[in-house]
Amino acid sequence: MIRTLAVGRNSQLQADIPLQRLNDEDIAWYWVDFNSPTEEEASLLRDHFHFHPLAVEDCLHVLQRPKLDHYEDAHFFVLHAIDSRSLQVEEVDLFLGPNFLVTFHWKRHREIDEAWERIAGNPEEWSKGHLYGAYLVIDKLVDEYFPGVQQLEEQLNDIENNESDDSNFDLMNRLYDIRTALLKLRRTILPMRDLLYRIVNTNKIQGLREHLFYFTDVYDHLMKLSDMIEQSRDIASDMRDNFMSINSYRMNRIMKTLTVITTIFMPLTLLAGIYGMNFAYMPELQWRPAYFVVLGCMLSLGLGMYAWFRRKGWFD
Image 1 (cartoon, rainbow, N blue to C red):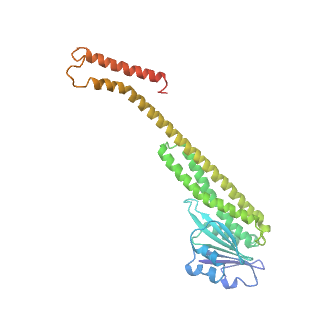
Image 2: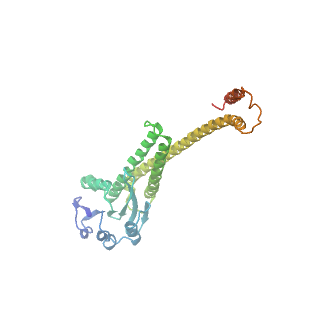
Image 3: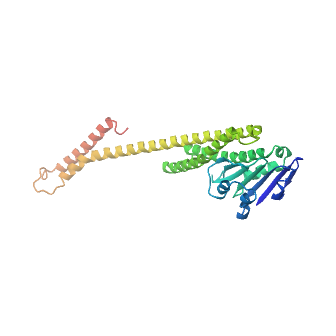
């Protein structure tokens, strides 16, 4: 689906006008949104708008890294949209020209719909021009990053509090899942931060200085998101190290206990093995109290070793 929005030089809004009328003299600026386009509609990027073939190729193919390319007829932005629930990343492409804004995305995004409705429903908004429209799209996309990051922070807090009393094995699995999600978000947020840094420092986009504080605000949001991501990664790393240290400590205590028990039973096993041999002429075999004497020796030896190990602190 292709939808159009044009603002006339008389500050009147015209919606869903044909593409052929967008270049009329009475049009001050326009916005064309390729919302879940068909292949035939997508070909209009090349056949009608005549955008650079490399930019069109980036739109039609696999997920690209957020970036900004400057061409003669338009500035090309690759943006990322994030589903706050699944953290799935989708590409949103944006062309910015002297008097136009073109957005292209294979799936419908609520953020772009909100920006579209905000422009279409308020004369003060559409009078600010196409650069302000581009800002709204980017701002809405970035705002949708916060719920996903905050959700992961809450999950880290749940693991730290462990109110459900989960086992360390389950907590470690959840922790590794969170670290994977943080890495996925980091691959989007850091390049988007770098992209906004390029935008606020470029001199190639005409008229940007008048809207610079808008884009600077988005850049500040991305800086905050970057800090939140790095802080969550540090917390996750510390928690992982703590879990591994606790598990190692528990394993060492178990091994020490088993070693002490084995050490106590070694001499007892030796005595039992000696008197369990089937030789006919062993000493004490015919001695009537020999059995009880050997049992007493084994008990005394075991208790003595236990007392000595406990005195040495091996059971602490």
